[in-house]
Amino acid sequence: MTNATRALFVLFGGTGDLAVRKLYPSIFNLYKKGLLDTKFALLGLARKPLSNEEFREVVKNSVEKHAESQEQAEEFASHFYFEVHDVTKAEDYEKLRNNCNELDEKYDLNGNRVFYVSMAPRFFGMVANDLKKQRVLSENGGFNRLVIEKPFGKDYESAEELNNSLNAAFDEDQIFRIDHYLGKEMVQDIPVIRFSNPMINAVWNHNYIENIQVTLSESLGVEERAGYYDTAGALRDMIQNHTMQIVSLLAMDEPQSFVDQNIRTEKVKVLQSLNFYDENGAKENFVRGQYGESSDSKAYRDEDGVPEDSINNTYVAGKLTFNTPRWGNTPFYIRSGKKLADKFTRVDVVFKQPVVDIFSNSGLESGITNNVLTIYIDPRGGVSFKMNVKDAGQGFHTEKVDLSYLENDARAEVVPEPYERLFHDILKGDVTNFASWQEVAAAWKFVDPVQKLWDTTKPDFPNYTPGTMGPKAADDLLARDGHKWVYPEDK
Ligand code: BG6
View (cartoon, protein in one colour):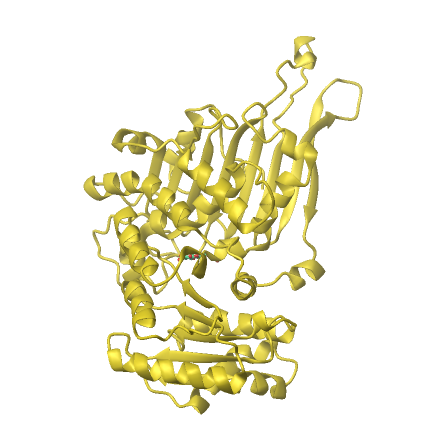
């Protein structure tokens, strides 16, 4: 085990929902696997006072179901400490500095510090600056890494402002912008599927690909998050970040080598080659939706905390094109929404039909269909390829067969949770699976005109029924190009 995996975690929002539900179990799993040195400590910060013992109870409860024994959970929780902290009070940082130094010494942590900010986004910049100004960062050669949860701004301008304030205290390679989709097994599989299979790599361009579809579908509604969601909407909540990240992995050119900086270079390059829309482009290429009611489900406007005249989007579909030799006119269609037919994420790559169909040219009713490569991201990972073969029998027809691989239970069980993987990357200092500033910036620049258009025009909402795949206009968006969504037809 190397010294690099020893660290002090300082968690702003230490008793928050994310910490308890996701972060502590993830750190625990790393600890169990020996990927986190037994020399580690975590300092949880929150405004409401708690003793170390009470905090450890919270931690124990959160990891219990992953523990092999009560003793193991207890030993793990014994590394946790709590401090009351008000991010607006200078004197609290002094206390924080002292506590960090003490824990560093106690656990022999070599000055390695991970600052994880899981709190209201308006505090991100301020916290980063105060950590530096008040000398909470270690100064003995250990690493200081800053982890920022979403949302990273609400448009390009605010994101840039936030980034500038982070940069005043941390360098880009010390900043880890979390996008938990980048921690998903099958999202990480995209480059492997593309670049380790010459047959796939060779046809990954506009000569062979008719269109690519990315769907992030959710069956739940807004739940208890109206306060946040009604100001974000699906465009900011799911498209600007998760969807654009998936698109960049699908569209990028082959990196020179599979190391973080080279991968970032290609992702940035392709995102910057998007055809950015003006207002008219946004109008033509994006569709918004909001769910209405059904017999067993409330309309968005009737959900707790949602204004009854809300024009917030709970559904987005859009068409993207890239100005690169690889992509020519091949469209990428993206969509995401709440209260849709099912909870899943998938990518459908629709290939072109043969340039010449010698079967139908010869008067045969061959019925060739487009090859489709599907990458299943959630809930179960997998890949399928639909191709044409001759059907059995006297006539001459083709039929579609499905070569498919679906992750089995045994494999699904060993797939780490996104946050577990991301924590491990943070400890290694590997930024591959985190969004760089330039990626975030390009994604905002792309969605901003859409948001602006939607903020200034009144939609006819609600326009889709819970349990469907969104408004009809989303089907029309593809039909206009002679295309259609692969899902739900080809579930
Ligand atoms: C979050 C969004 O980033 O992703 C949520 O804020 C959404 O609104 C969630 O429900 C979906 O994540 P997953 O991993 O369940 O697909």
